[in-house]
Image 1 (cartoon, helix red, strand yellow):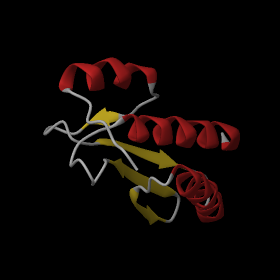
Image 2: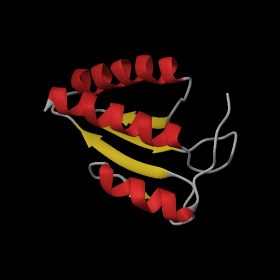
Image 3: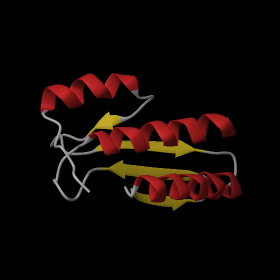
Length: 100
């Protein structure tokens, strides 16, 4: 898969299109914590997002602690942000919106 690295300006333009995502200080990843009422809601969110990530062939770094899911998105092939990170972030926001 071909990944085009986003420069700092492009990433800065994309970030405001997302809900609550933060740019990591080094500028090569975005991060967000999602909070749910229960573990099963958090796990359902992860399951839905895992299926979307598989379709995009772009997989998150994430962790789950009871009702919280922490997500870090970066493109390992370029060691930077690409449009794939922002596509997956939007899909995750959409999945979260269906649960809250």
